[in-house]
Amino acid sequence: MTNGYWRKGAVAAIAAAVVSMAAWKAPQASSYLAAATSTAAVATAPAGVVPPAVAGASYAPVVERVMPAVVTIRVEKRASFSPTDQQMPDEFFRQFFGGQVPRGQEMPRGRRMMPAPVERGLGSGVLVTKDGYILTNNHVVDSADTVKVDLPDHRTFTAKVVGTDPATDLAVVKINASNLPTLVVGDSDAVKVGDVVLAVGNPLGIGETVTSGIISAKGRQTPGDDGSSYQDFLQTDAAINHGNSGGALVNAAGELVGINSQILSPSDGNIGLGFAIPSNLAKHVMDEIVTNGSVRRAKLGVTIQPITPDMAQAMNLASTKGAVVSGVDAGSPADKAGLKQGDVITRFNGKDVADNNQLRLQVADTLPGTKVPVTVLRDGRTETFDVTLGTLESAKAAKNGGANGEQSGAGRFGMSLQSDDSGGVAVAQLDPNGIAAESGLREGDVITKVDGKAVKTPAEVKSALDRKDGKPSLLVVQRDNQSLFLTLRAE
Image (cartoon, rainbow, N blue to C red; front, side):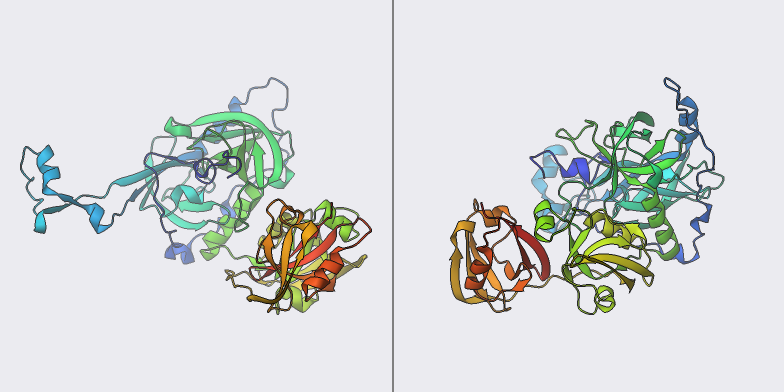
């Protein structure tokens, strides 16, 4: 949460729930996908489409083409109760049935089983193939027992969840139908800040609705992201509310450029901060789900960080562009190719790297086994390494070794240090208002290097930090079995 404004209900689940959703387990990809048809039939943008850019022009013709391909998705899930919750005393029934237990309710020991209530949710989706493949949000269909799709022509179908990808909040569902209206999938990379967009969906369950706005920003991450998701949102001020989840964000030519996913609001309602998953990312995820049943992602094998201004100064970098390698996994593709801690990755597979999030997305969008060039800045020189990417698997957390031995303080930084079994120097205590805490250090962090030099005692850390040139000190810190860079500037 950010100042109380970033709410779970308003962010990761903008589907309008009739009854609050319980935590469900994600459904597995359907087994019939082995014989699923290719998504090559997904409509793509025709060349030479010219949007109605004339000031004051009506978008009615665009809306008429788009609306038939945007559907309403209704889900149901039967809630589960603990045995205690499921049983009610005879007195409860007698209160409502004239002093008698209703027929058929007899159970041993004077207790009664109550039926579990049905939880219902509402969202939107986009038809992208004529044979019924629909893109929507993962949080719309997550663990639903039944999924119903209402078409704008008033037909209703029972849908099958083909697969989901919680990391991007995308899902693919399928209805058995043919000759359906579809949306042309546009190129979200070509979208520019200031472009006119329309948001289409079923907000608050009132029926199909279209709103207009512009692209407010690109490449957005939402506050509170823990790094487990892949976020590259298009931000828009087109009105998006609960129930718009999974709906279409289209450009002025009627091309799908995003799948609406989140809102930022102090009131759970629209205030002009809406976020959509770019269409290029959505199409890649859909292709993977339909073809393979899940999304395969590549692994580079590095821990990366954004470059702060202080870090750039400490590392003698000309700018903060790129992603700094704070750790390299032993035996990983990056390790085998020769990447090292402290490298700044500036290009990946021929494309510039703006920051660490963009690099994560670039790696995730590449198939495992692909050989890619990775360009880095190392000691003021530019070097390029060919890396054959591996397959990303779930990371398992590990704990640092315990601290013992020599203990000392670095008073002006507001921290107490002690030697650590791992060979570094552990942060034993922090003044929450001190420089170290404000710089991002935490109790339990193990400092292994200061300005590129290994440190093993508190005295060595203190000596290294007592520099007189005014530049921030660059620390390598071990935290939760990962290395990261932090800068510490004396005031």
